[in-house]
Length: 272
Image (tube, rainbow, N blue to C red; front, side, top):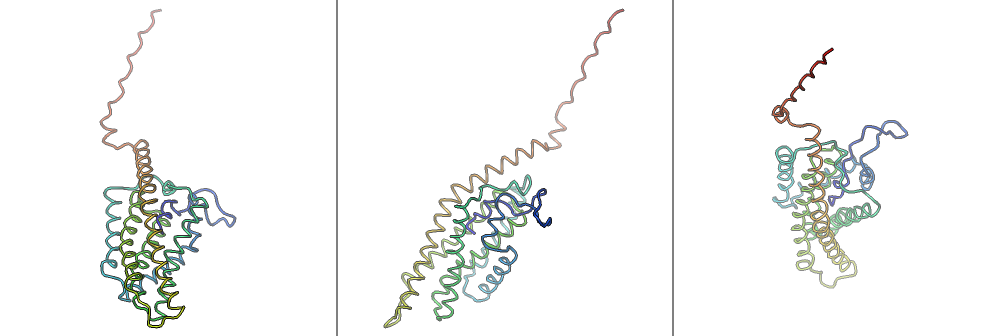
């Protein structure tokens, strides 16, 4: 969800080693562990689709945020088909090795960015706090669409590495604007009722801390991981794969322009 899933490589199966059941093959890199963080891929996708439909129908998501995933998806397909075409096999799309610290980083982003905001929105519905629900829903909608896109891209092995790196960057940049609105709402617009009790104060501070935590985490993720680390390595790996592909499969026009080897002159026959 923070782009780390795409950085860890594709989840398409490799041809080769099989598991004990003989049905599931070994997955590329450590990306199977990445998928295990959020449980079954298919179940997560269905849940995210349900969230997206509910958020879209609720009227709580601005039109700009509703159209943003459509624009990004079309833009990604155009980039992948015209500018950054895919070279090499899907298992060559791994950029980072998914170690334990990397998995903890993903789990932290999943809890802070998805699970806690979802609980906050549901709590807002239960308390009748429309201000809290309206402030947090755009971030949750965009993140749900981003996670769904990353899971589909990683599971199907589509898109080249530069496109894979650009998608979470674009989503993160847009979500920072949504998080800014969430912070403004919780810190400056939200007000306690007259004679507030402990639950009212705890609810208000829960929203403030959660909004600030998301802003801090995804700002660090964008400017500390995606742009300086993931993006350059993705381009470097992409051009390496492209050069290797052209070295193994040179274009036909290049082959046609190569001069034919000249036959060696026959040796003079020795006189007997």
